[in-house]
Image 1 (cartoon, helix red, strand yellow):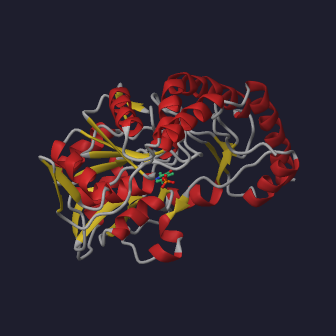
Image 2 (tube, rainbow, N blue to C red; image 1 turned 60 degrees about the vertical axis):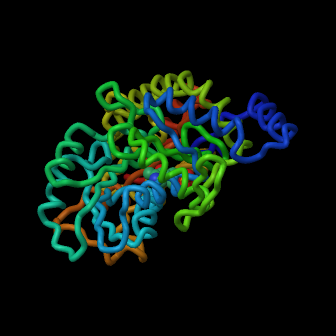
Image 3 (tube, rainbow, N blue to C red; image 1 turned 30 degrees about the horizontal axis):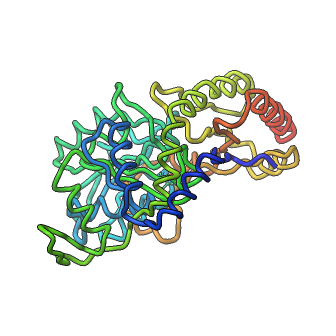
Amino acid sequence: MLKLSAPDVGKEEAEAVASVLCSGNLVQGEECRAFEIELAAYLDSPEVVLVSSGTAALHLSLLAIGIGPGDAVLLPNFTFTATANAVSLTGARPVLTDVDSRNYNISSKTLIDTIEAYAGAERLRAVLPVHEFGCPVDMDSIMAIASEYKLLVVEDAACALGAEHQGRKAGTFGLAGCFSFHPRKTLTTGEGGAICTSDASVAHKLRVLRNHGMESYSGKIDFVMPGYNYRMTDIQAAIGRVQLRKFPAALEKRRQLVATYLQNLSNISGLRLPEKMPGHSWQSFMVVLEKYIDRTEIITRLREHGFESNLGAQSIVSQKSYSYCFRPYMREWNSLRLYESGLVLPFCEGYSASTLETVSRSLLIAMEKASE
Ligand SMILES: *Cc1c(COP(=O)(O)O)cnc(C)c1O
């Protein structure tokens, strides 16, 4: 079975891990320091703070900018549940905004509609745009709205390392930008995450919070606030450094491969293709089925052909733990449609164009059978 994606890890990563193990320094050592510096250079961001996962990155960022009980945080209703969990875990209340049906991201329209309709008791303090599947959010307009409504911005760029809006890296627009290095993402350390920020005091707070609330100055150690253990290991950082060296080529390959899907799927009826936004990093390739097509049937048929496929992301408000969330009244939600009819196809830099052509042919057959 061809999986949705396969992490590109091998001999080089294994050697890097072996040398960390032999060094005896497993945490908070040279590999972590070096990976932070290299990532900061790649992102063109002054500071990068490594953490244990993308979820930890989101949780710590929200805490570091002072989000907590009594606050409300805007986020898209189409994302991985971790985005909403991070907000919830701070004690703040998620406020859900719809997304654009073509690029699956929040837009200035969906954001303003939600802000204007908001009637909850908690104070709207922040917005958490998600660069879904690596598609860059139009951050210029989001930043303008944030400044008009006095909202702090934390970017969920968990899927979007390398994505760019107007030549600037996703994650570097807000007060903090969060990345995940889970194996389903474009660069992996097994588990892992990172936060970039250009605010030195936020960076400092992140470093204290990820390490038990510990601060050290002139050789003296003190625990200045209750913190977490959200640290990345040097074993993970060593993998990440190898991955980062290979990353620009991998990203280029993904951008080229997408053309194969767009071309081969363009004539299949009952199917909508994602918008080819400039600067997209294509962590996942999701199409949207028309309502009359049964997605479960398509997934089953593709599996019979040897291809894994799956739904793309969650509608947060459709999950049991988030049914209480505020969201504006709307007759038809794009995010609900995407949740019900989105289909992620196998895609990563390691798959060949001819493999993607075969997937496309299998999808065509499955779609024809499903419409009979
Ligand atoms: C993967 C992902 C996360 C969570 O990252 P983990 O490293 O798995 O904790 C958060 N938000 C989005 C949009 C993601 O895709």
